[in-house]
Length: 190
Length: 222
Image (cartoon, rainbow over all chains, first blue to last red; front, top):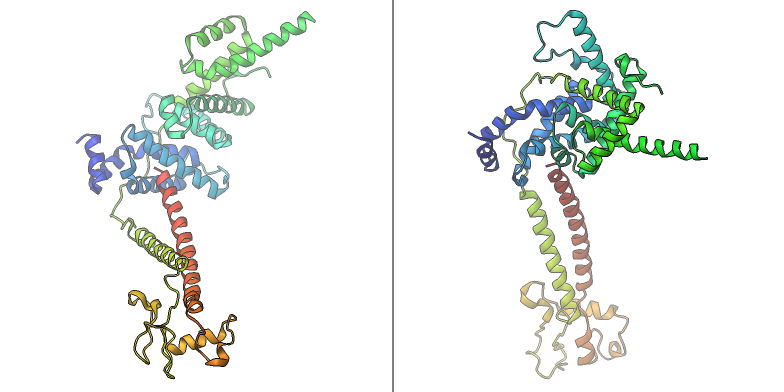
C-alpha cells in the first residue's frame, strides 16, 4: 500500500493505515524532537504528541509533502515543550549513549570515543543556538531537507530559511572553535 | 584616505561574501551570486578559511548519527476525538440565544410586545370600544403562547409602580386613563428578559470564541 492510500485511509478514520505511516516516519520525527529538546524522554513525549496531533488533524492535510507536514507538527510541539520547559538545561546526555546505527566495525576505540565526544559537543552547541536557528541546522544538515521543504516545516520564506541556516552554522562553528573541539586547521584567527 | 576606503570596500565585500557562504555550500546561489562569491574567494584568504570552517561544520553534522527511538509511537486506541459535538452544541445554543435576543429587540423596537390590554373593569366601563366581554382580559404579550398571559393583577401592579401614572389612580386605581397611553406601555417582563438573553449571549459567545480559538490553535499544529 503506498503512502497516498495510507493517507486516504487515515482520513477516513482507519487507524491501522495511520499507524503504518507512524511506523514509517517515527524515526525522523523522533530525531528532530531529540535534537531540538536534547532529552530522550521529552523527545518521546513530543513525538507521541506530534503523532496524536497529526491523527486528529489528518483531515486538514491537503496533499503535498507528508513528511514536511509531520515535521512541521513536530517542530510546533517542540516549540511548545521548549516554552514550557523554559529552556531547561541540556545536561541530559543519556540519549547520546544510545548506540547509533551503522557503526562501522572498522572504527577504532579511539576514533569512536573522539566521535562520541564531538557528537556531545555538537549537541550542546545545537542547544546553545536560538531555537529557530537550531531547527534550521537540524533540518538541513542532519535531516537533509531541501530549502523548500524547510520553508514548509518552518513556515517561513526561503530567504528566512537561508539566513537562519547561515547564522546557525556560523554560531555552531564559533561554539566548537571556542571549546577547541574543532579540527585545528579550521580554527580561525579571530 | 584611499587606503582606508579600499579597506572599507574589502571589508564590505567580505561581509557580503560571508553572508552567502552557507548558501554557496548548499549550491543554492544564483549564477550572478556564485560568480561574485567565487571571484572574491580567489582573492580573499580569510573568506576562504571561513568557507572551509563552515564546510567542516556541515560535514560533521552530516555524520551525526540518527538515533532510533526505544519505543513505537503507534497510536494504540482510537481515543474519542471530541469531534465537534460539544462545540457544535455550544455554537447552536449561542445561535439560538442570539436569535431570541434579536427577536426580543426587534419586537421591542416595533412594540410587538407592548401591552395593549383591552380591559374591562369590574365596574363595567370598558376602555376599548371593541373590547372583549366583561371581566375578560386579553394581552398581546401572550402572543404565540410563548409568554404567560398578562393578568389584570399584574397589570395593576405594573401600572401602579409606573412613574407616568397620572390622575387615573384617583379615578380608578389600577386602571389606565386612556387608550393611547395604554398602547405605549411596555410589558414588565420584557426588559429583564432582554437583559437575561443579552447576558446569556455574551457568556455563551465568549465560551464559544474561546473554544473556537483553542480548536484553531490545535488545527494550526497541522
